[in-house]
Image 1 (spheres, rainbow, N blue to C red):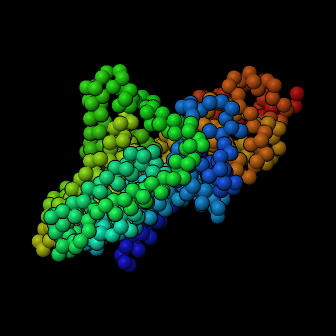
Image 2 (cartoon, rainbow, N blue to C red; image 1 turned 90 degrees about the vertical axis):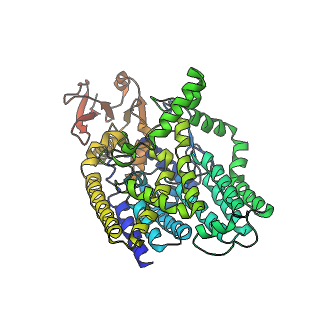
Image 3 (tube, helix red, strand yellow; image 1 turned 135 degrees about the vertical axis):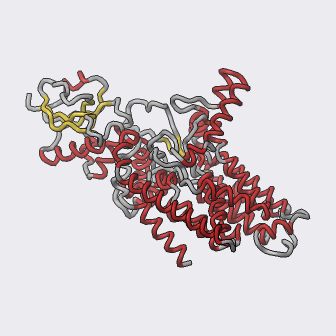
Length: 545
């Protein structure tokens, strides 16, 4: 236990260090999540006035009189409620809103995978290795240090795996009930959970049913114990209890959707609508028929098993990868294969990991989004489990060469991760700034607040074309305790609107050069730049008429 606690302590430090400055800027969704979570923490209602909503629209009626670029969008609520819980005791700032996801990805999930691996493999070393590998997975670090819900479905997946493992050891309806309830609650975690949680419930039924067949002895041996499972398996009572647990957890969602049917339509359309530059399977089918849709599905599905993506580059989106390392460290490519091979004597566990691993990218492939690990985050768990068992198997071998190989892989992982982490806190912070916020609005907001402290501002004018500018501005007015600035803010689409601004007003004007366009009657407060030194906007102030 002391070794695990050491891993957890190191992991906590890695995932929470400098949360306020790395990533350098809030993404658009981070800003939305944070301001809605703040409203929930303060009033129990989101910014649309809905009390404890089960689906949360990201729109802000006060801040966004214009429609969001993608229309109406609803998100599952678990991530925002986690942030709201943190804001009960912490002030609103970048570190506070990112802390729940960081602790979830870097501590809670690490602890859960330790418990799952110890149960499935009956091997403390394999459990320690699995926990360490998940903690040192670059993609897990990156997505866990953002105030989003990308890692929120993983604890529910791990909880389901633990219940399944315990059920196969000693069938009891309470474990079936717990598995169903955990998976039902998991539906609230992330959009792909809508697909995965019912799928995992079916997986529970299948493996529990196999445990009640003549193959029960094999299941028992797969879990590292001799003898038979005894009476039980998936009998009718356990099956009903699992359904009851799943259904009971969904009651609040169902009741809420009966009152707000438009929210369900919104989230269905959201998943059926492709991201910019891509097409969903349904859109491809509508345009090119079934063969074209099948080809596109397979192309995107394969992208999540592309060795370059997994072990070399990690995708092209800089808010998901540094570009210098893959989703996993390079030794995991070998350790995971070794682990799956060594599990050939524990076929039930081997098949469980393989089925779940191969299913992980399916929702992303349906959505039409390749190389986005947050949409296939289950890979982080199942690959870490396989690699952890592979590492432990090498060490358990009596051959000196195998043990030397295990030590060598561990040293390479430590060396590669240290290089990744130095880059993540250093150069990556700078080169990824544009991916997180191309406007570098955090710098601009600080300038406006400082100017208001010097001389009170009459009105604030922000360009409506700035991507999600109102969510970010609401965040910074709350952070700096300047509610008056929020209430005195207007949005403009055409610079001509600034002609009617009262004296003492401040405006933000987008620029692309070091010599911004001069506007009569306005003086420059500061030219703001991104982390690369390129100008993004100019803050100007209107003098007396």
